[in-house]
Image (cartoon, rainbow, N blue to C red; front, side, top):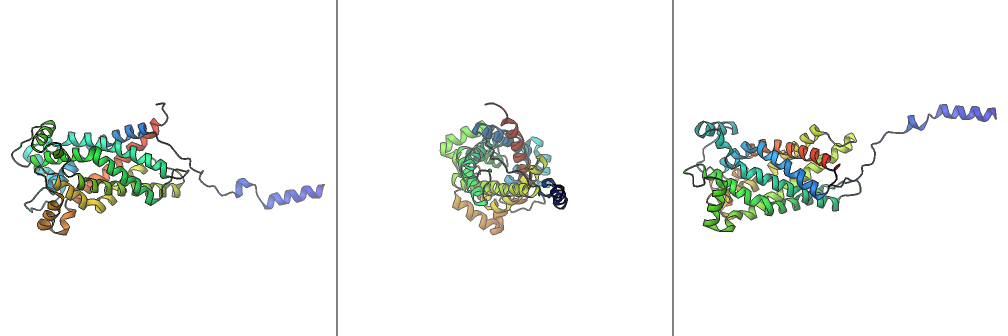
Length: 313
């Protein structure tokens, strides 16, 4: 009996307890379900905050893309400075109301669509493959283009374009009324095809890259990123999105100018005026916006959604 006890003690000494031998691994993630209402509310709030905070970047990018005089602009700062000096600070918020409303609506539509498709395509831990993440993002982009992006972007772009010369539009509502009177309801949906291409590509790239980066973070650190980490991941996703999708954005902007150009006319106009490089015109200004945009919208969305999931709806 003593021998058995000694053997057991020796064995225990040679092989420490499981506590010291087991390699610590992150717990298996559980699939988190986000209800459509939570997705819609969180996305709309995040979109509204992002739209207002980053509008000056959007204004500068749009104004540059609508220039046809070929004049060089040193930087977004110089462009905005000149406009403020000439027309005041309020000038760089021309069309802001339309964009903020549209951004809130489109972000709500984007996240409710993306989260719904993600729930169907993801595995039991809530993970999406890169291809499925891009597919979910593409579908979300197409839906938000039809529901929200095309009409609000058309109005915003027409207002900024109109502000370059003798103004015809006194306000957002006046612009809508005048466009409908002159061009019918289709005038509000001018550029639908180019906008849908742009929005689908943008959302696929943005949501897809965000999904890959967020999954990589969880694999590397064994936990979901905090607010700062989410902001950083969203900002990187914004950088990737700009350079992949800028040509779609340039064509969309020209299609939605005050006069409105067909998609073929817009493409030909860019090539004739600036060559192939013209398709990336305004990319530095859009980059400034989407770095902050991506960081803001994803971090605000994740924080609000995490709070709302705990409430009874």
